[in-house]
Image (cartoon, rainbow, N blue to C red; front, side, top):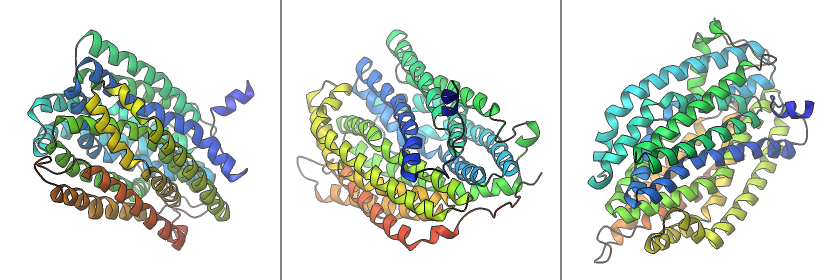
Length: 468
């Protein structure tokens, strides 16, 4: 019983064999990321099966706009995770308590902003992207419901990020498993039984995410052995708010940059027609699962680096960085092999249209080897962020996604125009993504080895930054 309770507590990553602690922490987080990916995948499978390929395209076309408008939460979540990990590693209870309270309040403010702004700009953005008339109403309805219910999404991600910063990746996984089961059940109920179509899957997701957020909050309220959480601590600290923004804004901007690039490339994808849009959705859903180990190891390295830097164990950070990256690369290589061998079976889950399956598989083969490069980028960027250097990963993202990916995508499309492909070959968007991933990994490796991140930790030992 005691061992079971220990699974659901904060974990100290500053002791023990580095690679073992990283793997122990990563596995439940990986499972959680896979489960979270099931949210979108369940949406796609259910609308594809019960409504049709155009509905599947609508859900996918809404994705880039959704990601762009959620950058506020990405920033708060990343900044909170870094600060929580470092303060927890340094055993600074007061600063840890004020950080958590400040992030809860900042999330409420960000949620209100998105609830107002999101529905106002969603349809104009869809029109700007030349979204086909056959799916634009579905796209707009999906986005608006998601924005109106944004609080559940935002609080789950922020509170789960705080739990992970404390080393507790198990609790967030359990809560997410419960809400995902609910999400799938509500998807089937709203779409298959009530015939709500694309808006129905958005409503199911909003309700399920709200429940997972409530579970996370209840868990945090019970962790009084590590920090305090009361009404007085919800008043934002100016210094801590500034630090959250300073650490989180580069990651938020990175997400914004990536989302803008996706939106620009989505405009190109839309020009290829509904079938290519639907193929893009299918590939991105499979891609989401393939990327999960990379994102999980990257998040684990952020927490590992943050706690150990807070504890002044730099040599342990460097040893863990090497071990974590090697393991992540090995996992990505195995996933690449699976995708190349069995990818067609995965495509058949989403659609029974043979032409769409063949097109999707052709695109996936282009991307497959890029997952190994992303493993390197995510792990080493995670270390830099955990140390407090969030700017370097942002610049790497800017170079690889904007300076390189967008011109390559449009360039290939332009030079492959012809009678068979009036707007260019649809492979252009996937080739550009592979090139972007590869260059990003090389730049990340070089800058990690230069070592500027070692000087970026956010506080001195015992320093109080929480102002009341």
